[in-house]
Image (cartoon, rainbow, N blue to C red; front, side, top):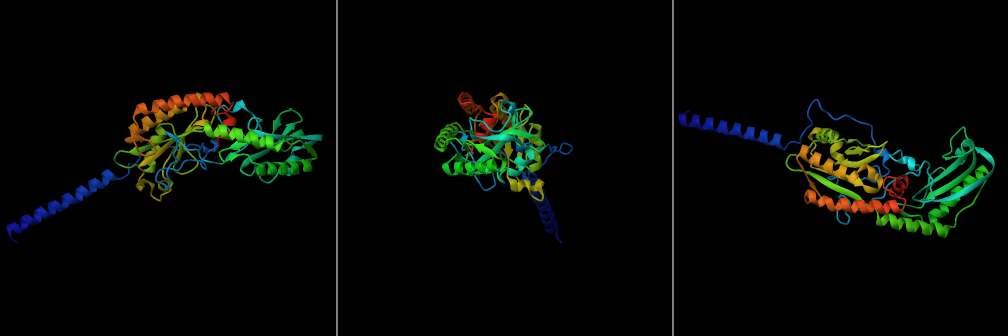
Length: 368
């Protein structure tokens, strides 16, 4: 072999080595960022159950094949979800102790001649707790305490009342749903020997439509996208950085929540592609976008939810090298958030004036 051939072979080997090294470096550079060892995120108790929207009404995470709901300005459209007539364990829940409330329910008293046991009441309850798409409930007046409560075994009740919710995010109570409510309440009354006194259907349906109109005009869900500037993130990396910002694991994969400062509940939701979270090798899954959302009516204004959203977004953008965008992917400067804060204060005032203060049990039920 000549000197030229040897030289060419050496140069070729060096070029090949350089190409291999460059490819390895490039792959490493573009690989999803992984969590730091020794600082893996803890799996905290899930809090989504305290948020009536929970995950059935959660906005889809980026990358799951759906687009987040769009709305006027920076407000996202509302999304129907499952709700429970019984109050969720949440901060400020002491404002209303029991489920039925004349503000948001059509209520029918069920008079008794004799006390009825809780066991008999439970046996007479209908198999489902809904009338159409509206939550339905029956409460009993405890013979010992005089308080209204959901029937429980081992207790005695001197009266009952049945109620159906007037409106939620599926719409207003209609005539068919009211008729179903009457049928279920009547069946319960017959079983326990009670005499029902039903409200006028047309009046209650009209109340439902008025409440639904107000709720539709004052419903707001904010959603912002955090987009990776360069390298994508692994799910573990997302969890680690979100945990440092105060988020804990939700009930669904790819969902985390920021707990309220009060007794319970959640203020913000952080979500990403569920498929990436469920991947067999999640550290190789690439996440490029996060959805940071606030359901305004679900969080009490004393929690300063929008201020916490801004601070969470700032922390996550800094720690994860991300940029904050609107739902169309347009980067948002810090000054763009100020008008939203002012609009929210006005919205809080309007909800307060209607006795549907954000974060109250009544608001949690109607806006769910």
